[in-house]
Image (cartoon, rainbow, N blue to C red; front, side, top):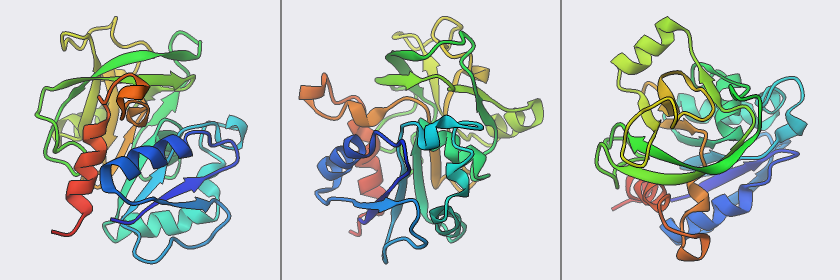
Length: 232
């Protein structure tokens, strides 16, 4: 499986993402600067990692979505390629029109840096197959603009098509207001595209893939990707 991690000015989670992908796949991903115009030949997975691309000026992800490499990323999506966007990567995916909705300021108007718990809403995607539906796992969050918003019509489509991948929940699995620290609509922490091949999520599974990090709660996501994209 060949993965390419896109680096924008201000990206700061590319090495964490590379560690997670290498652990799950046994292969080191390519690192690609945003001013490139093409993906490496044979790229299976494009990753937009977390950070503060272009200093979060204008809106988070707005400038990155217009970087030269994003034309190639859109083309990759159009031909059925897989894309993972985490935190700032999720923001970029919405700004690029590859996922619906928007990420607004946290409802607390404060930057949130803490662990949260996520519930797996579906286990039949290339990103979630190593879990069971309803599984609960822990993931760190670190964002100021993680409040997922979509209008009523878009939200109904996401729910009706089963495109909510993860929700913020309590450790016991309840999708409560208390568990929803950033105020995201319907406790949404991650969504997939219509063809299930593009995932955007706010928390950071790449930061829990080894006991030395405090746990391996996020590793199933990367093992799911490896299982889906590695030839038999």
